[in-house]
Image (cartoon, rainbow, N blue to C red; front, side):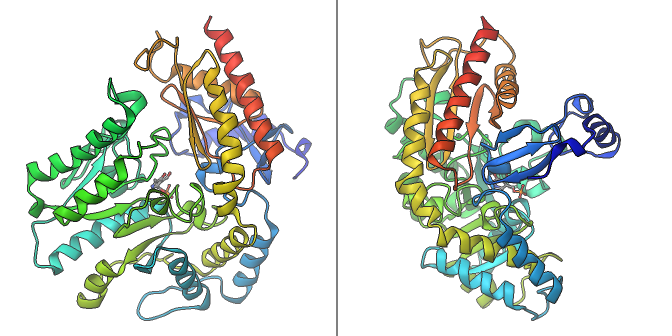
Length: 457
Ligand code: PLP
């Protein structure tokens, strides 16, 4: 990692605050305390003041193989010196894009054999909207256009992605969602399950889809989209009854099932795709993040034969594409990243080794007086912070999110990146995290909880 004493942190902060418009940031809060990250290696990042911080969020849920893998940089360098850029429009291709399409198709479930490349998860979800609507037009059902999504889901920040997402604060800025998208309940047992058991609540949440389809009429509903586990919404792990019921409803009502694999894809749940973990067969899978471990921006949509045979088989040219669809250097990064995931058996490791190891230690944090539930699946975890352990519905006597933000700041101070969502804390570390580092993560999380608890007294 670089040596940090070369940095004048305050000056960097001020220059940043003067011109850089940050994503998801209140600009007033910049300047005095923004964090300047200068290096990364494995699960560690380093800030400009020389602090080593355990990256419990794998960047933004993306650095599966950890930071600083020279092999990926070398692959990108080699590709850039040969062909840094060319497009894939108008019957043009190049070796990295065709190899990557082949590779992703080989990792995807057998009924999915086509990949459309994008630059991000948001672009992937915008692409999904166009693909499903085109599909139903070609099937002679032009009224089958509405897409059902979930409250508190996240599918990106473009107009389409944010509309599919169920984040009300985002909808409030820019008159979203666009027409033709409706939202139903999420399978969030801790927050919304009431007196039902998780299994009962899973069925109830899934049947909200059935009710919505029946209210509109199945001849008007094009697709249902959901994350296997809601990530940005707070690591909402659906009860086991949820996904099989969703799959049944989509099948019986002839609704396309879109499973957003942007976070859960590429090993996060101990399978190549989250839908495989839950045993469902999607018609479309938007992907991004772990595809390249974030080393270069790239996303895509993995498409089933059912949809591809219609949209590009019967439909001819699909008027859709991005300048950076199948960018050669990004494809080279993705190929090198997938080679590491395969060689180091990271997917199996999450399922059989480090996943269960960290889950057991993480769940033990549920004993802490500040924690109402400690849940984890694969390498995605959440701690629900509560003022007292008397029941799930008890809230802090403070605006929602304040305790989460306090806890997140203590986590940083303890050298751990955890994200605060409402009053819960979430983690999603790189898949390469070692057993010792997993112990360290939990130890730092515990110290953070202690500090937050002491502050609240
Ligand atoms: N879908 C999901 C499930 C995500 O978590 C995200 C980003 O966090 C996106 C889509 C959007 O991806 P991007 O930020 O690459 O546009």
